[in-house]
Image (tube, rainbow, N blue to C red; front, side, top):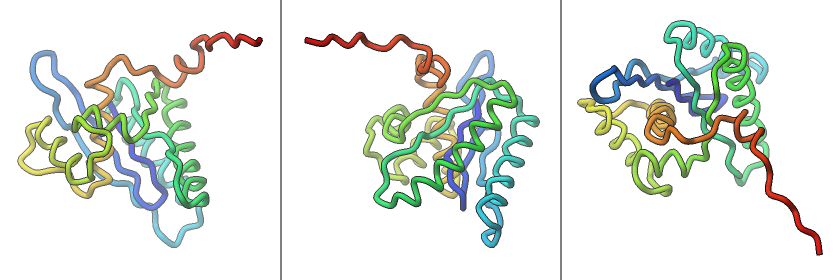
Length: 173
C-alpha cells in the first residue's frame, strides 16, 4: 500500500506491506520536495515523476491519499488540489485503485481520534510499525499514516466504488 500526503512544497509518502504472517512493515517513506523556484507546473511534474518511480519500484496494490479539506486560504486549497490531481493521475496510469480519506479518518484509524496532533500521528505510526523512531518529517509520517489507515480499515471504498455506489433516493413532497 502506498500512502500519500499531498502538497506542492512537500508531498509525504509511505509504503507499507504486510507479509503473509506477521505485523505490517514499513518498506520506505520520505518526502518529495520539488525545487522551490520552479513554477507550479514544474513542481507538479516533479511530484508526478517521483510518484511514477515509487509505483514502479514498489508495485503497491493500491494508493491511499488524503483528500482536500476546507482551508481558510482558498488559494492553498486550490494548489493542494493540483497536487492531488497529479497523484490521482499517477495512480490511474498505473492501474492502482485509489482510497481517498479525510485527514480526520486517517488520524482516527491510526491514533484513535480524528483530532490527533502531528506528533501523535508520528508516535502511533512508529508504534504500530514497531520502529525505533518515528518517521520524519511529519509529512512522511502522514503518508505512512494514510497507507496504514487503509490497511487497518480495508472496507474503505475506492474512489471508483464511491462514485459507482447508488445514491439515496430523493423523495419530494
